[in-house]
Image (cartoon, rainbow, N blue to C red; front, side, top):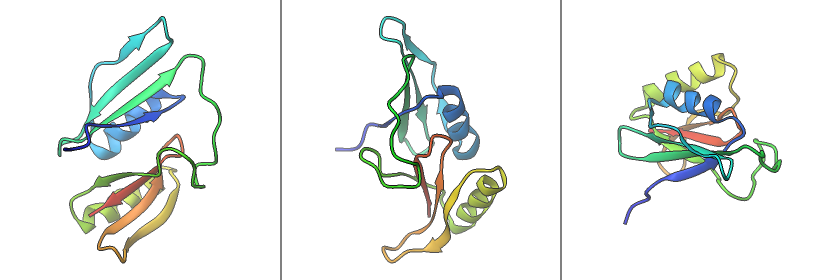
Length: 129
């Protein structure tokens, strides 16, 4: 068994796609559109084989909790950066570019070297080595 993909709702499909492509090297597939349901999505593929589905509805989404507070649904998306140096450099680049860094790179008690940032929609993205 393996996880096929993780899906995330967004009100800004193109913005969120650009974030994961630019900072995490995801390759975006073709946009899927279902005009009858007002649904659009992209599948993003990462070099390690993981996939992320970004989904939007023309009618919009119901507002949820603030991005820096725990909420029902997706807790966080963990992306392996490969090594400590990449975690540090990527976290710094995201901070310089105006994204919220919730936790600077650090060694955790469960064996990870990680940071925690918010994507443009307020989803928690753990950058780990």
